[in-house]
Image 1 (cartoon, helix red, strand yellow):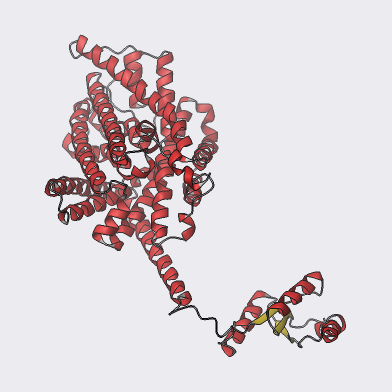
Image 2 (image 1 turned 30 degrees about the horizontal axis):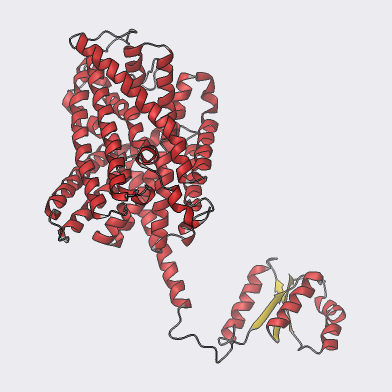
Length: 562
């Protein structure tokens, strides 16, 4: 694609929901499941806790939503956590946000794909031995679609996204109608598993863990605030509409699921038990039965779980691009490919996520505890940066905007602490190691680029008065056509030529005699300068190291030459 076709690759709000909000909407499938799993030991007593906690999660989602809208106002052309934190809090805060986001996006791909394939193999047990192959196949499919270009991927992901939303909305509407008609006590179409009757601990001991699990839903809603450049004309309005659609749909789904789970008195089942059935599966079966529509809904859920990784394929390369342009990642990440996508970022994300899937054999339960930490850390820095932005702004609504972003920063910071405290022993310590390592790596890359910049910098106008005298070093092993071409090029560059031959220490070969017989007569006949013939002995049979050492010696003796 030509660069001027970039505008054609932008998407509108409807496609934007599928490109940038897929993993947020997908959290409606696993967020309630993760939260209610914590309440399994409470038995029947846990049924009443789902709705209040979901209301709390929705309240935090609303705070984050308004905070994101303020970001769109402050950065109408788009800005992510790295950009805002770097500009308002300093480069170190920006790099910390970038490292956190890279970890988050990589985990999102691995966990999203494995969750979808895990659900598929649960429904079809014969596929269980092929879990890893199926995960890698989905990963390669996502990679191919995203390498084709953003608009094509956006349109490709629209049908499954809206099928998922449509099926769930229809299930929820039917369930709510049945609940009201029955006076709040609906009868399931198919019998539900019996409710456990035990209560192992005080229910209040589960509150933080339940809230933390439910907050998986919230850390995925920020995409619309950072993608203004990828939305069609009127970026400001398109970004706000996209963000509003994502958050509104997510909150409606979460509240509807929580209400009906409570009304139908559904509890989570142990994921490791043979009788395991997901919350959405039980709820859908209770409301509409186990007919064709049930299987369509489950298929849509499975598809969206696998495709939820697509948001990372949109965001990870752009984070790498922005960091690369600032000199903290290799510059190749800032180069767009033939399809106007950042090919290197997509490939690196594929390799990292694929490595995680292979390492854990396609079962990434151990990675789930790490899932939200990166997003919460980046989002907290992001909103703190926006508070600094509004505090320096002369806009008449700056104070209100600062309060909104400040409230969001406090909410996400508290949630981050809850996540770290409750997940530290489950694996959060790994993120505490990986994020600083990425931070140090980016600083090292920047130091390398700055060192190269100092070495190649010109301290004034370009000077051509004194041409550089060159020394040509020609490594030769055997005399052949390649030797002939190399010598022709060397004599075209310089009159000071060094022929370097490396041989074993006790070799019986007489390279000097070969040179005098096959090369020297031609040099004498043409009248070219006599080259320096250097034979290096290599006791360890190495070839490159002796040649490099010789070149460094030449450089030390002739600092004015190249």
